[in-house]
Amino acid sequence: MNKKNNEIILIGILKKPKGLKGDILIDCFLKDHLKLEYFKNVFVGSKKLEYSIEKINFKGNRVIVKFSRLDDLESIEDLIGEKIFIKRKQLPDLDEDTWYHHDLIGLKVKDANKKYIGNITALYNFGAGDIVEIEYLSGKKEMFPFDEYFVKEIKLEKEYVVMEIEDVK
Image (cartoon, rainbow, N blue to C red):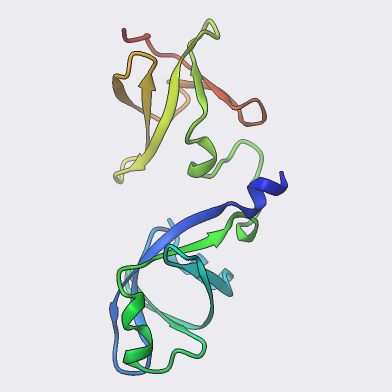
């Protein structure tokens, strides 16, 4: 479990400067942007440099952050376009029968007979509920609603899900 706690999770991208005092508009991937306030420190870019969040402003769906010690436009220019990460251990614990998307990606998919048929490669939400993408052993990919009709069992600790789907050859 320690390894998982040190895992980093992508939560957004630094988009563009906002003003001249080091504020940056971000594209936040969190379902609830207000949750960004829980994170005091984030990691930025491919080198995962740690930055402390000094303040956050919410303007509708837009999120503007100000990092400590970055007080002007010049100090943030190199950060524009970089990805923002947090450590998994910074995420709140979830109730039983709820999961973070990143915990499900890579899990084995078994059919109703518990036969291994592929892996979860992605989860999406286009506004009408979660969609799971499965890559079958044949290499073909297919998407299904991530709901109780298709998903019958999730065994996170055993790294598989059971889905009621037809195996595609």
